[in-house]
Image (cartoon, rainbow, N blue to C red; front, side, top):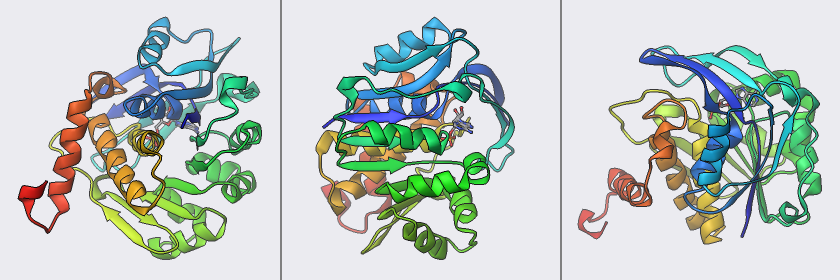
Length: 305
Ligand code: AMP
């Protein structure tokens, strides 16, 4: 199966209680594609400006990410500036510069149109729908969003939600989207907008997945060093969708395992600024942490894991 993502490729400036990074590689599609590239080949749809540094292309290519859907437009690359307090679960946006995103019209290369797995990453919901219209017959579509779009493009976002199978958002976004403080009630409301499955990311408290039949809870990996939470959600989604694409198992077990692989990728990502930790990750490290996740929650015989 093949995996397509639309989202942002950004230059991020981030401040956390532990340090600061300026104009580093970020964006929902960059994090997603890098995380997913450990499982499968990813076709990326995004836009950058002429100022996008050459070294970042080289890096994305080195992960064998297909960049034929990456447009380069006159103008500046999308920029995001954010800050975190000691409560690392929540980013405070200081500035969003849409730049080339304002005139971006995604056009899928013919080789992308047959993608079976599609991730509509955090970006304008109008662009999410434009991409979806160009994909011929996807097997599974997942999407993400954030407060910026929930507040600024609510109706369009609802239209995107009608067309997706899985929504992957954080707890604050779920509450805001549903207008409901209780997460179980918020999940019911969001699923009534269209998606069969809702995955709510709760930062250091892990993940809750709601579908027709069950609720599944996964913890976050108890890390000692959390440096920069930026991109945790997109790395989660990349690990999740990458794993589903790799195995093709879209049943309950396959999806639950993919939630854990998503959590594994998010846990690595937050250990360093930008994509620094994902850059030097190895597949055995991913598999080891997956086993540690299983040990973390099992109540069966530990020798079997
Ligand atoms: P997250 O996984 O939620 O931490 O996503 C972080 C990434 O989202 C950063 O690298 C930002 O560049 C990107 N981002 C921030 N604001 C927006 C926005 N309004 N639309 C799309 N991407 C954004």
